[in-house]
Amino acid sequence: MSKEPEFDFAEFLTEFNYGELNQKLGAELKSVASAVDATGKNGEITLKLVIVKNGIHAMVKPEVKAKVPRDPAEGAAFYFGSNGALMREDPRQVSIDFRTLGVRDNHNPKTAKKTSDE
Image (cartoon, one colour):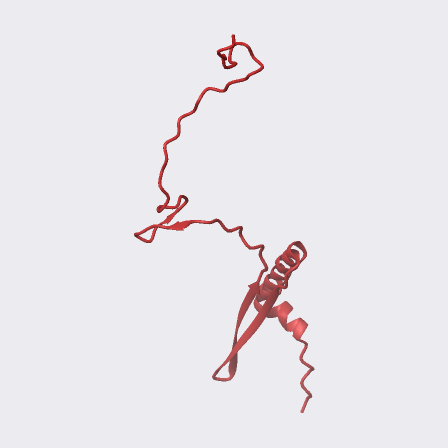
């Protein structure tokens, strides 16, 4: 009786689906490593192999999950409206209509305020 060869996991990954799994893991690793470098946050890649017996065969189904770190989006402040809508302006704040007045320059004779002494 011949002895079974030792199992080589790296070879298994290379041969699985003609190398597709190995290529996918490599692409995910590159993506996660790049994001870790850019954000300084941790990343993660998980390979799950589901093995199901099918008669005399073993069906192996891979699941690859990657947690790519991202920079958090900047937040923005909003007010709650009475109907649950988010609003940029406070709905409780009284609205005041302003009008623009002309600008007066006391050093300019055309716009300087006239005094009663003149």
